[in-house]
Image 1 (cartoon, one colour):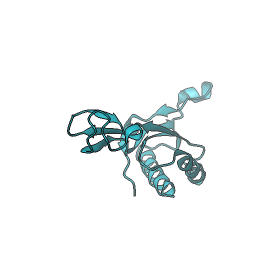
Image 2 (tube, rainbow, N blue to C red):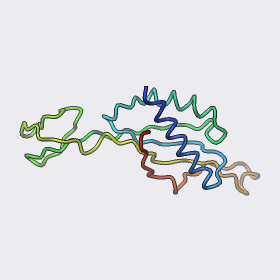
Image 3 (cartoon, rainbow, N blue to C red):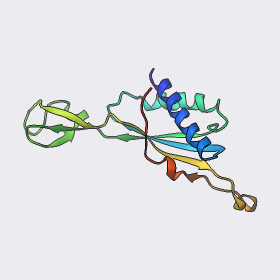
Image 4 (spheres, rainbow, N blue to C red):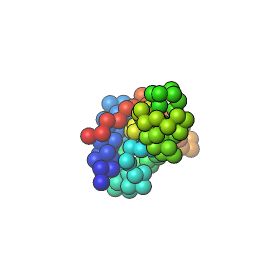
Length: 141
């Protein structure tokens, strides 16, 4: 199960960003995962819940996973097509001179943080997305 290693890596990156920006609590992390990345979202979410419960910064933090569709490019006819539906063989010309152009990625898309402010005393503060953390590339360990 490589999902646990991915979760450790994500958590470390998110905690480093939080510390760097003096954030005490992260409320949500949104990942973009490629459709053919071999990551099982349900396993990733289970591992995340377990790992986040052990961190003061990530405790009760939600993990949201968005799938990036897999797309393949055909070198012979210059067309792109859905990888999962058609595999390596181009549905337009039958060529096998193809390669994956999208769908194997793993990115931290967004980190939402809890930022207490003056409004908190007047009824509470909503979590805010962190612009610094949007679109971070995630490199698997």
